[in-house]
Amino acid sequence: EQIVVASTLALLVVLWFTQSQIDTFPGWKKYVAKDLDSASLGLLLTLPLFFLPCGARLPAALRRVIGEQRCRSITTTGPPGLEPRRILDWKAVRDGFQWEILFVFGGGAVIAFGTVESGF
Image 1 (tube, rainbow, N blue to C red):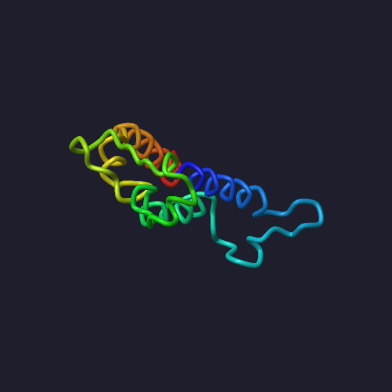
Image 2 (cartoon, rainbow, N blue to C red):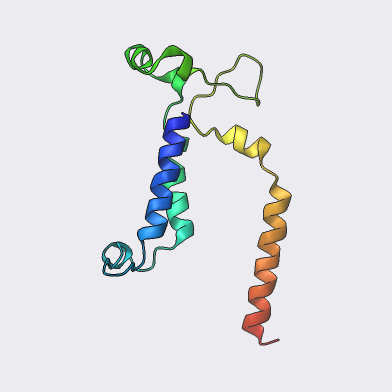
């Protein structure tokens, strides 16, 4: 699981750095989607983690190849002994995320945008 998340992060960083022009390299964004922004890339690469099975749910043959010790999924949310089903579990995100911070920053962004648009 850590390898999958690290690979996703590495791919995300590479995509972020190569999306715009660097010297003679025109950037991939010019050919793919001009309106695609950095946040969209982050969401695009994070969403599959909600669907990929965690190490404990992999087929037995694949677990033996990877190594049984690397396929132990541990979660701090939910009832004891209940293993997560996916790499990124919605229950863990919902219970572990501090939503107040999101609302404070989101509210600040809305107020700033409204102030600029209204001309104050």
